[in-house]
Length: 109
Image 1 (spheres, one colour):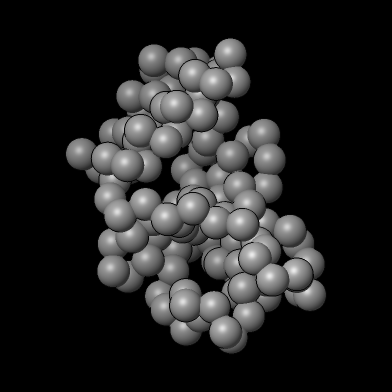
Image 2 (cartoon, one colour):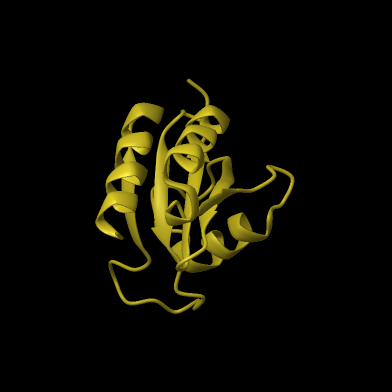
């Protein structure tokens, strides 16, 4: 299953309650923002990243790494974050991403 298929299915199933929208991989603005926020000491620093999707209801962005891992970061839009920020959640595969997005959508009823 592809990310596009997951988003299509969740949007079809939940309609307006599903609040995520895919981003074009050519849009590097969210990648640059993440790099400003995580800094050089973060494990993802220097890795190839793509911003895949953004939540319409907050500052959360779904990123894909060159290793095939997915991360959802809650961006702070600040260069000088306290330790532990920006908050992120790692997903080892696309099925875990689908489950998390669906659970999030169900909670927001």
